Structures are given as structure tokens and as C-alpha cells.
Image 1 (cartoon, chains in turn orange, yellow):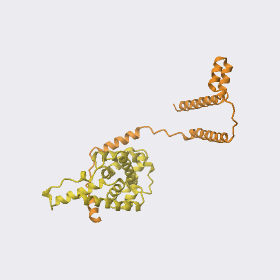
Image 2 (cartoon, rainbow over the protein chains, first blue to last red):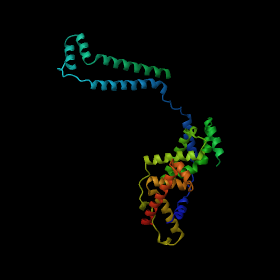
Image 3 (spheres, rainbow over the protein chains, first blue to last red):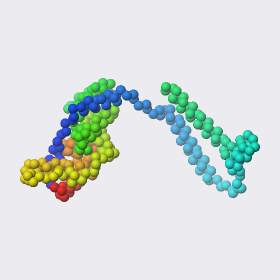
Image 4 (cartoon, helix red, strand yellow):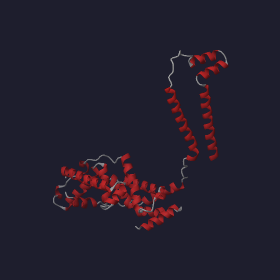
Length: 131
Length: 179
């Protein structure tokens, strides 16, 4: 079969006539769309400082990990594990408990708690401003 | 259908007159439904797809840059939607045996036989791999205008020509086996 004949046959597609309610259906959908509130755009300007901080923190962690892995450590006798320290702390007094927490990195725990508190407070304030 | 009518209606819609969009729908409903039908071969689904295309056109009306004709922009948007929707929910795998219609011995040598063959060939396009079928569908929808088909598909003209050539070859191969 030649191209001309194929072209002739494939060009003769029968046209469909739209159903009578098509325009009405489309316009109903369009009016619904028009009456619905516009989607809230993502607050890039507000989120940007947080995102930048995250990226910087990630970079700092990577650098710290890289520098940490470069230093040679001498083999040392294993110190008290966190669990044994907690056990000691619980069995003695509050000072002992704090010491136990410090073995596991109290500073980091406090920092994480503060960051969590700050992020929750900030998001609550942002929501409060919107409503 | 004049380009100035489209532009005037688009400007009215963008100014807040939603009802002006009805003129656009009335003007382009038939081409958009027929284009969708070429993709899915199902009348009901073709209307659903065309409705979704109009809705997307309404949402994106502000993105139409007036350097291209409104129809070019609308067909490209609709083609993109139809292609992605049919990839997401295929119309069903069809073999040439399914699209070939039973032959009637009374039709031999008559007009009806020719019509039967033509119909079989048109439906056989539906059995081609998607990329060749899309090229053929758009080419014949745009009345054999390669640049228009290429714009709707968002492909270079050379790619469309190559796909048309390969699509026709595949079609001939299928027809030799079955017609």
C-alpha cells in the first residue's frame, strides 16, 4: 500500500459530535474552580532561613565527621557504658543521674530539645498569624 | 474560528469574566474531543479527557504567551494531558485481530468492502506502539501538517518525520499479515 493511499484513508476519520451537555459540564467545572479559594503558595521567604540553617548544619556535621575520622585514636580501655552509668545514677542520687546523662552527651540532648521547642513555637506562631 | 476571538475571550477571562470561557469551549470542543478520541477510541472517555483539558487550560490561561496561536497552545496542552493520562491508565492492549472486523462475502468487490478495509486500517493504527501511534494520530489530526504535529507533541520535526515513516512501515507490516 502506497503512502498516498494510506494518507487518504487515515485522513478520513469520522468527526465526533460533542454531546449536548458537554459545554454545560465543562462550564460547571470551571465555575466550581473559579469559586474555590486559590491554593496557598508555599512560603518560601519564611522557609528559606530554616532551609539554609539545615543545609549549614548538615555541612557542619559532614565536616565534623570527616575531621573526626581523620584523627587516629589510641586503643583505650572501655569506659563506663551509658547504661551502667544510668544504673549507677538511678541507684545513687540526682547528681549521679546528671553525670550519667553527661556520659551520653547531655549537651547534645539539651540542644536537640531547645531546637525542637524553638521549631514548634515558631510554627505555632506562624499558624496563629494566619488564622 | 479567528485568533482575535480567542485572544479577546482569554483577556476577558483573565480580567475575571469566567463566562467568556464558554466561547472558548464552544469554539474548541469538537477538535479537542476528536483529538482525544484518536488517542483512546472511546467516546465517553474522550469527552472526559477533553473536559479535563479545558479545565487545565482555564487554570493555565495566564501562561499562554501570545507569540504562538491560542490553538497551538491549547492542542499542546491537551496532547500532553491525553498522552500522560493514557500512559497512566492505558486504553487496553489491542491486537490487530481485535480491530479487524468480520468480512462479509456479500461485500466482495463492492464499496462496502473498501469501507471495511479502510475502517480496519484506521483502527489498526491503534495497535501500534504508543510513540508511532501518537505521531500518526497528530499528523492526520492536523491535516498532515508536520510542524503542527511536532508542536503539539513537543518534539523536533525530524523526530516526528522519522516516527511517521517507521509507523507507516509497521502499519503496512500489520496489514500485510491481516488484510
